[in-house]
Image 1: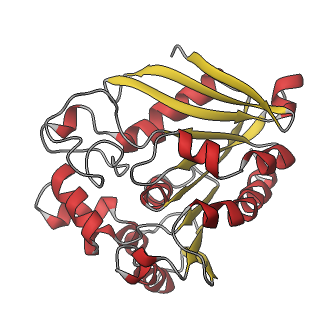
Image 2 (image 1 turned 90 degrees about the horizontal axis):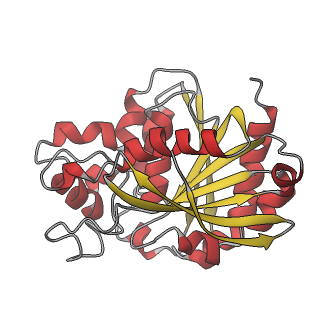
Length: 288
C-alpha cells in the first residue's frame, strides 16, 4: 500500500494533499485528494474521516478546487478524502466516446460486462481498497467514517452506505441520481456495466436498496436544488427514494430543497459547510 505524494499545499492551517498509488482493484494507477486538518498534522491526533464522491466528468480536482470545503473541514477537524470518478489510463475501446459512460463516469459500481469488468470496480475501490489505504497511512479515528457525494457521486455515497451498514456513520448527498434504474443516465450505465437483466440493477440503485433495507437504522441527508435542470429532466428522481423511505421504518430522511439553486458547484459551495457540520456532529458523537 505505497502512496506517492504528488502535491501538498498549506490550507486553513492544515494541508491539501494529492496522492497517487497503484490500485490492485482497478488494475491501474489512481489519484485522490486528502485534506488533513491541523490537529492531525501537529500531534497526529486521530480524526474522523469523510469521503466525498464526485459526479460525471469530474476528476479528484473539481471538489478540491471549486467547493471551498477545506475551511469547514479545518473548523471541525475532519480528514476529507476524495477519489477520482473512474479508472484512468486503461485504454478500453469506447471509454472516451461519451461524457456519461466510461472515463469520468464509473458510477461507483463493480462492472460485470466485458471489457469493463477488468478495471471498472469503483464500488470495491471506494468501500475496500481506499478505506484500507486511508487507515494505513493517515491518522484516522477508528470507526468514525462518513461519506457524501454529488450527482453520480451522491448515488455512489448512498449505495456504499446502504450496502454496508455500519461502515459509514453518516451519509449525505447533493442532487443524487437516486433511482438510476429509471433515469436515462442510470439505465445507460447499468446496462453497459452490469448487463441487460434489470433485476441485477437492484443492488446498484439507492431507491431499490432503501426498499429492501432491513439492517440498523440509517439516516440519509438528501439535498436538492430546485432549479436543477436534471431534476426537471427526471434524471435524479429523489421523490422515488423518499417514497421508498416512507415505507421503511429502518430508514430516516432529511430532505432539503434549495430554491433557485442548480446542479453545479456554486450550489455545492453554498451548502457544503452545512453538510460537513452534519457529518462532524454524527462522527464526533460516535462511540467506538
